[in-house]
Image (cartoon, each protein chain N blue to C red):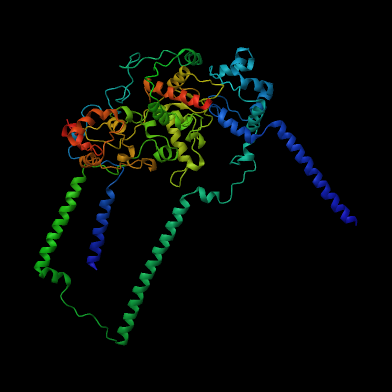
Amino acid sequence: MKQVIHRKLSSNILRLSLIILIAFSSSLSAQEGDPAAGKALFNTNCASCHKMDKKMTGPALRNVEARLAEDEGLDREWLYSWIKNSAGMVKSGDAYANKIYAEYKGVAMTAFPQLSNADIDNILAYTAVDPCVSNPKPGCPGYVPPPGGEATSSGDGDGASNNLILGALALLFALLAGALVLVNRTLRSFAQEKGVQLNEAPKGTPIWKAFVQNQFLVLVTAIFLLLASGYFVYGYFMQVGVNQGYEPVQEIHFSHRIHAGDNGVDCKYCHSSARVSKTSGIPSLNVCMNCHKSISEVADATATVEHSKDFYDGEIKKLYAAVGWDDANQEYTGETKPVKWTRIHNLPDFAYFNHSQHVSVAGVECQTCHGPIEEMEIVSQHAPLTMGWCINCHRETNVKVKDNAYYSKIHEQLAKKYGDLDQIKAAQMGGLECGKCHY
Amino acid sequence: MKSIIKITILTVVLISFASCQKDSRPNYEYMPNMYESVGYETYQESSAFANGVEAQLPVEGSIPRGYTPFDIANTNEGFLLAKETLKSPLDSAKVDLARGKVLYDIYCGICHGNKGKGQGKLVKREKILGVPSYADAGRAITEGGAYHTIYYGKNAMGSYANLINEEERWQVIAYVLKLKADLEK
């Protein structure tokens, strides 16, 4: 009986403590706000200018409330009024407000009158979350690397084991072949010792001699060889000057797969001059910085087996070095150096090509000529860029005359000439004239 | 046996020749002087200039033909001034919302979202965060302020002055204001 009472008692104590704990923790969260809701609010409202652990347009915000309370003696009320109307705080002459306004060179923080005190509580709760709790990383106290993480992170492991298997197979085959040769030799020596006569094939005329003696065969072979070599020599001479498949190594590894493919950035975002000019320019580095001011490292998911996260982060560092961006202090140093990009698609000087004419007027997709750029990790020349290739497209492609003011006049003239207007090819509008491209 | 050795040697030689062809090098040309431009090509290296490249900045203070200088300064005061006073030169007949949409989708939609809610693809993929909605009360965007922002950039947003010209900027702003009106409905 005694034991039973004891058992009940201990379980009761456990239950009670659990209830107390739950009550305590729920009251805590009621006071402190909800970090999950805070994260959503932070990402929509604050993250354009603030990062957790790094200075951006505004200061880093990890544990901002605790830091402010400790260093400046400012409480949450100060934060409420600052977030809701920072410009008003600066004007009212608040000492710390003016200090921080001056520290960030007069960049005013946007006012957020739409955030309630509860919203701000949630955001502050999110900034106070210990990153080691939600997302353990190397460097956190008590960090244990996840099991199997090593194997997945080192992509070379797969290749190495494949090579090992192949090597073992090759060795096995070599051993087998050797064994067969040895068996053959021993059997022969046995046969010789026992005096068994082996059936040797009777020696006739060797095949080469028979071939040389047959003049007809020699003639046919000679003609065949001449034709074949002519074919290959012609093929070789015809591909001189054609750079299809050319994929040079660039000074900064720029992955079109990540930018145009995964992230869906429009081609014309970076190559904006393709819309309005003859050349589709290589974007100047300030276009890179439109996004990479905020993106200083790639996500873990971006890394592939071939290219690690460290590799991609290193390439972003190269961009920062070239454009003179000091990522720690979030300002330009003014020390720039041009990047030596290697041009891939290069028409000879005697051929004229205009991007805007094809991109803006004709509405040709970039991929028609440049291939599946959005899948290319390293860009290679997709089309041969030969004259035959240009002409072929001009012969086969229908001109988009519909709703295209550029063509309305020639459209009328061609209607008189051809009658049927659904199918006008570029060739019919002078797309095959020599002088269009060579002058 | 000898012929086997000969065939092997021949194959090895052929393979080594074939593997010499590298995709990281451009091919040979028949007459390079016809292929290569005498004049400077865009972005070409050139010893004629001090910094060694053909692409040079215009002389300071020069105004390219067809361009109007933008007098408002790149400061917070300048932004407020533009927000209050700057007005679009486009009248209702010149506003081309279809073209504005095309340009907006290329240059702005990737972050601001095609509806202007700040939910572009880069935001959804958590590459760039905190892009505000155009209907954001605390910002209360106006056409002048938007022009200043496109011209100089603001906070994490960079300048788009070199990507779209003056008229295109105002077309984009007309479209942005339409999106804002749609969001506030």
